[in-house]
Image (cartoon, rainbow, N blue to C red; front, side):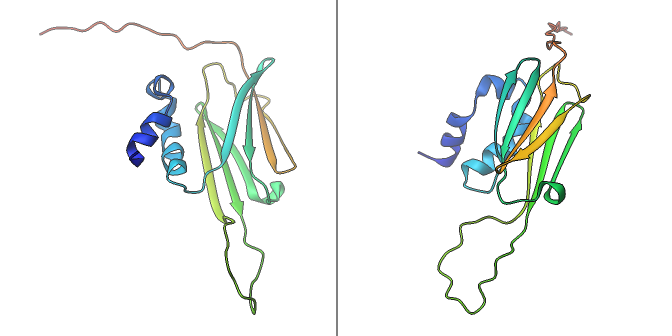
Length: 145
């Protein structure tokens, strides 16, 4: 199967076309090609959206930055290479180091007030309050000349 077909099949098209994919697409694309990405899971719990990110091997006080702007959650992580292999025969390194960013479009109703984040056992958890508002759909009339 071609890479483009695999990416197309992996996408949740209704969600992507609804606008979330335009923000999430770069991570989806690069992740499908095997590039480094921050893996996340999202779910609602009580009146909060919970986003969990798999970010092991970092110091949350120094290496993680979380921002929210206009309904977009951005998680930035810096994983520093601290091991040295000088004087050793080096066979393989599959660990990924450097800067990683994950941008997530938040659903309607997500608010930036009272956002909480915690880091435990390599997992970052962000809890975002939801005010219950739903996205409104408005039909747009088409004019003819």
